[in-house]
Length: 295
Image 1: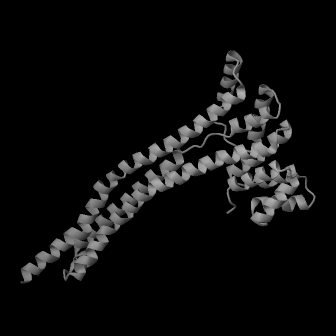
Image 2: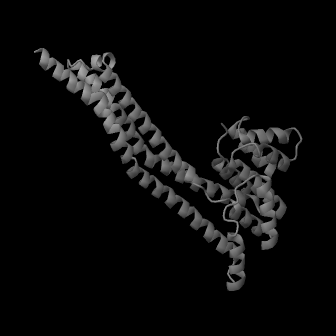
């Protein structure tokens, strides 16, 4: 799959800041990333004679939301005349923040997931241990009606536990909604010299064109009104709000993972423990009792 763009954007921002033309900057990044990368595809179209803005638009539309955001940033910067280097660096920083949050969530989930895998294997390990210890648990499980019922019930509990845990973990990732790039694009448009109202119109047009999420649509309107009432620079207000949104998203993701660690105890106690009893303890008790009767 194509790589996500933060590092490529940072390289582009540095090259543009050093004075390279947009064409030359994309060419250098494409050479570093290879012909199958997104920059490589863009430069291939550019080399074939397609205008750079059109090549970026054509390629990024078919990519992930991050790359579509890159296409939207390029379009807003082109319309407003904003410096591309600063715009790309700001976007890359926002994407790096989102990736950092995602890595933190995955790191927090690693412990609970490893615990779940280990606990889920305990019934099978206990079975093997009983067999190696001379207790014939397998005959009970596979050759008797009570054993088959016990095995089926244990496997059903394990399956339900795995399903329950998977739903809870999936829900954590689905509930994570990174901030909309609307404020990023607005800051670029305002930085290019467009009026706040014209910037809003252009940003909403471009976001709809690139199918980008627009949650919190009234935020910028409220910030514009506050800026006019208080006489505070609009760009400073928008930047502060954007940084706050990113901090909140990171904190909420960490909170959700911490809550998940506690909730995962429920399937462990309600399903995995009964599975352990049905698959391991019941056959072991039967085997020991059966041996005692023979003796």
